[in-house]
Image (cartoon, rainbow, N blue to C red; front, top):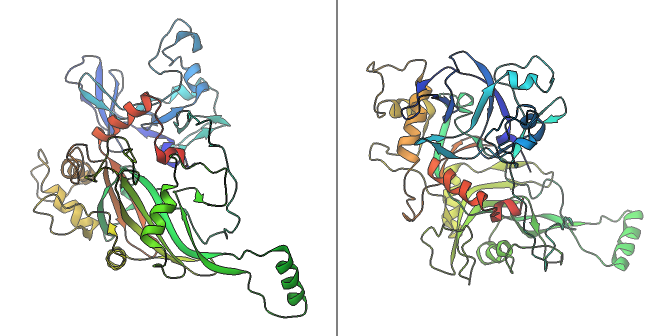
Amino acid sequence: MSDINYKCTIVKIDNLIKHPNADKLQITQIFGNTVIVGLDTKIGDLGIFFPLEAKIGAEFLKANSLYRDKTLNKDESHAGFFESNGRVRAMKLRGIPSMGYWCELEYLERLNLPWPVQEGESFNELGGIALSTKYVPKVKINPNTNMQSRKKHDRFIKNQFKEHFETEHLFKNLSRIKPEDQLVITWKLHGTSFRAGNVLVKKQFSWLSRFCLNILQIIGVPVQYTEYAYLYGTRKVIKDVNNKEQSHWYDSDLWTSVGKSNFEGKLHQGEVVYGEIVGYVPGSRAMIQKGFSYGCKEGQCEVYIYRITNTNSGGVSIDLSWQAVKDRANELGIKYVPEADPNVFFQTSTWKFEDLENTLYTHVEGRVESPTKNSHINEYTVAGIKKFWLETDCHLDSSHPEEGICIRVEGLNPTIFKAKSFRFLEYETKQLDSEEVDMESSQS
């Protein structure tokens, strides 16, 4: 499991306002996140930022006496506010969202960690000490299944059925987007990741057939040991009907059944489709993600495609453009993830980044009066994205919050960034508080 989105980062404080409801607290913005800090924090202070749902390392918490349980701290007379699991939770402090944790750089000194560290550096560990990783609750294992099974798919060929790449946090990576980059903005759906491919696999032979083929190969007769076949899987796991130890979270293999009914016999050789399954486990009353029906009727689900690649026999993959993804999805009769277009002044969901910045700049309340962009345009870009696409009811089903958006930077190998709403993060935090593990985490 990748921890790329859960690294801690060396950050300099460059903005502060007083907390409206607490005399001893201040508010700062870090990577688009509202973060609560103490009254002694000053502009220019250098410190460490831990993102939401990160697990802060036990040695760091102990050395700085940050545990709520005093007996876990180096200074047992002092109590902090972190539980024993070290989670950075989404919460509100006196009515203001808290979306991460920032502390002074001197907190590292108490661990005698290597110096110097520079502003902007990110890491999961330093000097061999774990500092910030993804928090994952303990999986409650069904005694009738083996959740620890890691048997490899015996026909899989490396680089033929690739996992979907990690999507990094948008607000931390705005500087990576060039003004001329073509962007596509789509809604982020809270289901379970899915992939289906008609890909090159190893042929299956009996021992006798393999012996005969080896003889033919020795005498110079060409032998074909591979063929194209359909594979289905989650983000990380290839589903294998021949692996009897493999758990499917529910009693049935959702991914293979959905894959066969929607894609079997329809994909080109080398074509891999990536998407999200939302709604209900087919034929059951169980939601794929608790509380998120996305308007599906009980017992039914929907597949939404967000990416399609073509991979050659050498394992080189090329992505379809977003327009080609939509055209191919329509050809397959499958939905694609909805484009985010919630306001009348947005005429399209495909634009250059500089056009997006200019548009958002003119529609953010409280902006400076100058009609030209200034060096802090990212503040307005972040504020505009939050205003128009986050913190709203879901457009597919208003009974639950919108998870967020994905911004895709077009190219032969596109980059995709994500931004989640605080309302969704609060919901996710409550789920983790109850030690519930969603399907996505379990299949990772």
